[in-house]
Length: 355
Image 1 (tube, rainbow, N blue to C red):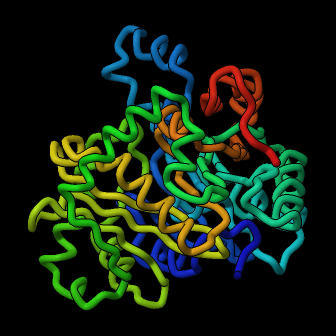
Image 2: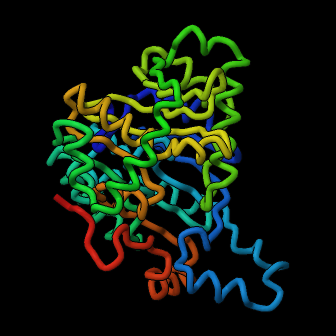
C-alpha cells in the first residue's frame, strides 16, 4: 500500500488524477497526498435548519451564488479515507499542507480523516489521529464528517444474515428478493473484453448518470473517461456485478476485493426498472453473499443512504474534516458556527461504531 488508511487499490487514485471529476483541478502535494480545487457550496454540509434560514432570506435567489467558494481540498473523492503518505510524519505533513496551500483559496479542507475505524489497522488509526491533532494545532477546525457504512461478514448464510434483522424488515427483504428470479445476475471483471467497446461502456455510464441525477448531494460528477478507465483496468482486480432484465442491462455495481474486504464504489441503475426489481436490496445481498463465499471480513458499503443501510444491519464509522479559513475574521466566525456544518449522525440519538 502506498498510503496509510487505504481501503482500495492504487489504481483508483491514479485514475482520479488522470481523469478528475468535472470541474476539479487535481494534483498532489509535495508529500504525495492527492489534492484538488473545486467550487464548493457552503450549505452542502450545513444542517437543515441553517439551510432553511439562509434560503429564506430576502434576495437569496440572486446572492446565493456568493456562498459557492473556490476551495482547496486535500484528499480524494475516490478513496474512503484521506490517504496519508507513509514517508512523512503527521506533524510535518500538517505543517507542510498549511504553509504550502493554506493561502491558495478562501477555504482549505482536508477531507475524510479516519477516526478509530474498525476497518483499518491500529497503526493507520494512530497515524490519522495524530494528523488530525496536528492540523488542529496549525489552526484548522475539526468537523465530524459523513458516516461510512460497513457490515461484518460473520454470518453463515443469507438466512443467518436475515435472521438478525427486525421481523418487519426481514419480511420485507424476503418479499423484495423474490425479484431475483426474474433477473440475470452476473459478475464481470474489470478489463473484460466486452468493455473495450464504447457502446458497452456508454450503457454503463448512462446508468451511472441516472443515479447521479437523482442524488440529493451532487459534489463529484464522475467523467466518462474516468468510468471507462476503471471498467477497462484489468490490473485493478475490480468486480462489476451486472443485473439484466431479459437482454437489457438495468443495473451494475463496481466493487473491489482488497485487503480482505469487499469495497463498494460505484453503481448505475435504469429507472423505473431498478425500483420495480428492487435492485438496491438485491445488489446488497449479492455483495454480501460474494463476500461470504470469498471468506472476506467486511463489506464496505459507502457513505450515502445511512437510514436504509442501518435497517439492513450496517454499522458505521465516522470521519473528520479539517477546515482552514484563510481570512482571519471569518476564521473566528467559523469557529463559533462550525457545529452547524457537521454531518447528521448516522443513527439519530446513538453513537456510531468506533471499535
